Length: 289
Ligand SMILES: Nc1ncnc2c1ncn2[C@@H]1O[C@H](COP(=O)(O)OP(=O)(O)O)[C@@H](O)[C@H]1O
Ligand SMILES: [Mg+2]
Image (cartoon, rainbow, N blue to C red; front, top):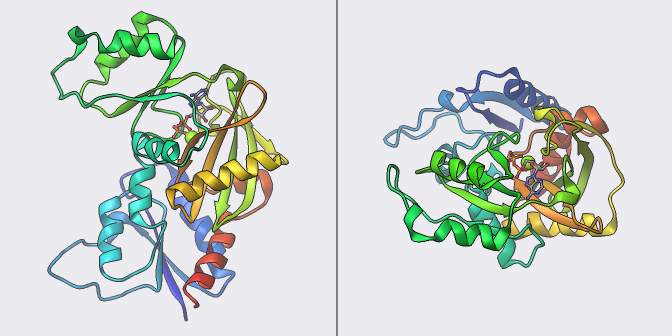
């Protein structure tokens, strides 16, 4: 019987991570695949010992890129490919790729590397950033999910306070798309197809993330939204993606980010589509299992 591992992070204690791993497990069972749900720390990355039990493939719901690489190096197909997870997990890296592919994104400036406990405050760099992007603007850490590392900066005081606080951390400065305040669209893509989408909105926050207090509902995508979301996933090489789209001035789609380890619970609750089923179909087809 075909079997797979579903990997989530063992250090995250919130129920939602194991819950979505179980939802994925239900999905693969529908296709007669035997799932084994594992924490990342259940797999010993001992470089001297070959893995004994080897699954036919791995669905990787975590961002432990080194574990992904370890499994890939053992010849096991991993979805998404760990290289893709690594790129997407660094917002600056993914914006570089999206801009290279001419995908519409908010105007973005990648902050230069500043070593911890050092400063470039005296160089005039930050003044240039403010002049180019204007306030209010968004500051976004390279690594972050659920809106937790995304900040709306309205004053120069907040700006300097934040850049000081982020000393030693990767981040980007970004144009605030005011027409999209508190609302966005999550588009789930598998292979090259859109399989589900939801409109998310918040009355209390500029971030639309559900985990951050937003609510969501079904939505019919426009042709443009479908195309841009597909192009964004493709530009990053993500076979499985959760693309966040913002609304520009004339409601035109602007890519906010691409998630390569997108959660599947909320989209399931809102649309009834278990994205895991679509992913399983895709993987079985690709691997000819
Ligand atoms: N440039 C922006 N302009 C307006 N809203 C934004 C912008 N960037 C992010 N947001 C809002 O913040 C939310 C979280 O940002 P996102 O980049 O998707 O980070 P995360 O990985 O934490 O979800 C988005 O869903 C969107 O509602
Ligand atoms: Mg997001």
